Image (cartoon, rainbow, N blue to C red; front, side, top):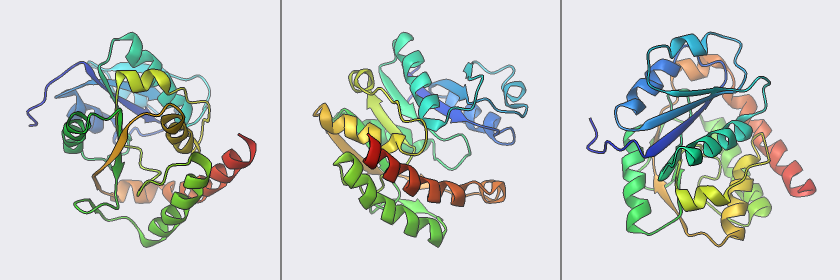
Length: 229
């Protein structure tokens, strides 16, 4: 178990139809942190899987997208007086141990936000080659859209301070919300850094068949964000 047990750290877990993995993901996080599950209008039994857990559960009545779910979570965490806010995917790919590591980097560098990276030395991932290529391309399109050149511009694992979260208002609901977050960091002159993290692509996520579609959608949404923001 990690040494950090701090319920002023709120982990936002946006989810959509993750009934097979959501309970395990949340149970692990609850050992150390407060957890907000934002259910983006799932049609499965996600809510029932969380029965008995001390989790903050919020459900959208319409499927709005990951960006909208994260914004809902940020607003709720701020109302609950969160000191630090983490965004964490529901599908079991992120490593909970990376949260503590990212918090240490945040404090050491006196940064406002830390972005997780699958491509920095020290990270490990079994990412499929096709997705790696798409994300490398997306990195540069993301730079054109946001003005920030990160090594991994579309990683869902981030840690931010309360002050940073107060300045992050996400209005891009889909994949382009990543570029918008980075754009807001740049516009508000917030200090940022990156941290190597471990991402495991499981048999479950591969069978679900969503990731390759999302890889293409990332490029599409980034182009739209660049053209029409």
